[in-house]
Length: 355
Image (cartoon, rainbow, N blue to C red; front, side):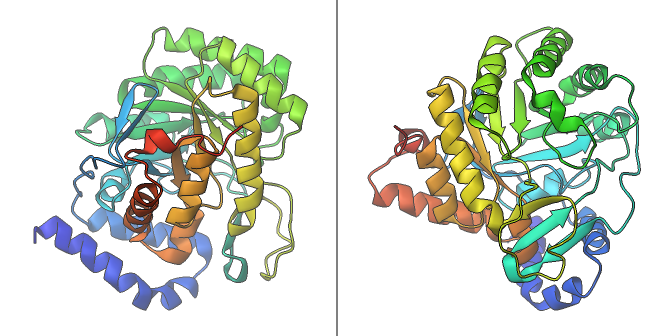
């Protein structure tokens, strides 16, 4: 076994032993220590394309459809290691034009009884310039960059345009994130008028066909919002929609941090995120590719999202509870489900359950 493979396999097998100690720590401190530990691992090789799982979206070829959502690798420090854990693609960020500290701590909370996380991080990151330098040395593997606006910005649309210009040279795709609930007023950019102005500025800043630009939307939307987002996105050449970000809603929760403010993610988001994906599929009619996120923790979850219309899936919160072997496990189980139902590829199953 190669040195890198052995190091990654060891990390996977050790997680179950280390989890109680990790969970004894404050959630944000545990995350920082996890990233620091990953930085010490050798860079893993991206997964090889699988004949059944390999798929294409927005002109990009993905070795498998299981991706790491933004939020884990905020500053583009460990994307190589995450690709080595079997993710078909990794999304770094959210990064803003200028560094910012984010919201006051504590701001990240585990709800272990619910398989959930609540966060109100507030786009804490070290800025786009440093992330661009770290990604500039990249060779191999698909990496997207999630961009946002600074909290104190006087012109948030200008911040997004600046993010496109700064990160386009080092990104396989860009994500315009206007759906975080933790920056006051940010979700207002999903309103039709604001979205028109934003996406026009993004298109001008991109000034070309590449890289593809995705738009990340909230799950807390009404039907009229969904129709407007689809219409405006199609008109301005958005290449895919990521459905969805965290929710402000609060289903019945058991964890002691259930009352904390912020965005809820993980298992309790599963039903809402699937329903919203179905809504966007109906509104778009397949005209805009969809990426599913929210509450995905198994091959069955990934398969349900694909059948509902998603070409790719992303996860993050489930990693907290399931550990570093999760991406490979989901890919393996997804492949078995596809073959069981007579599909020879992911693309054949996309939208199989959609009207």
